[in-house]
Image (cartoon, rainbow, N blue to C red; front, side, top):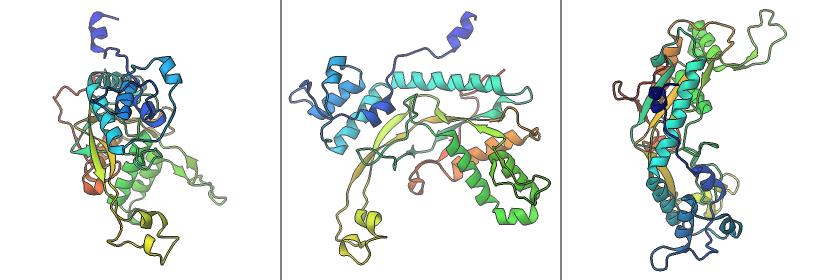
Length: 330
């Protein structure tokens, strides 16, 4: 490998798995008395040192899981710690988007163009997903299990695209007027229909889709921000359907609002990648991959992704070409 090729690769930078820390080691005690008196609280100082990797093995072993401190304080220190480690975060993102490009390069056929297989989209405002996943803070953020960075799973992209296409062209209308559209949906997204005994032509079958939707990964660093949701009728949301006729579960103005802080992202880009599945039984029609990736970008632009899209979260736009985001797959 020549020097130019080596310099083009993202450089290795030692990092922590922030997602693992956030989900599995959200400790708030300070057994080693690590707080700086008068400067920071025990919980924030301890968690900051933990995220920065400044605790020894002996200190880790003596840590015990105690009660959680104020949610706003812990969310704030997570945000600040991640913001202070932007160089490492950017290194992780660049390294693995580069690796994903290399994977696409090896899997794509000679007739597939770079601009058809990979797209880059920019978050218009903010993005958050995984809020409902279990976490002792009550809300969560969806982290990649091995990379430790926020991301959008390929399965989610596949569902977003299918939902967008079905809403744009309702299935009932398609079944009456466009058999090709139905065939397209079954080929791209697969089918879970069980074969029927009367189906001698094997038209109904359980099959995987003919395309692979890769995980959408951030291309570079991102900005972590703190936002707050304020549900007013928590008891009604939780027990209103089962405990009817009770004042405590009736939505009204006597309930107290409960502010819940959570982490969100802004000022970042996602790399999208879609390829025909190796070994697909049918050769994809010319231009179909370009249509799929274009429609995926449209779905992220008009329908959004993740949580809280009703208030403006999760919308993306296609990144302009010529801004240094091209991917060399040749």
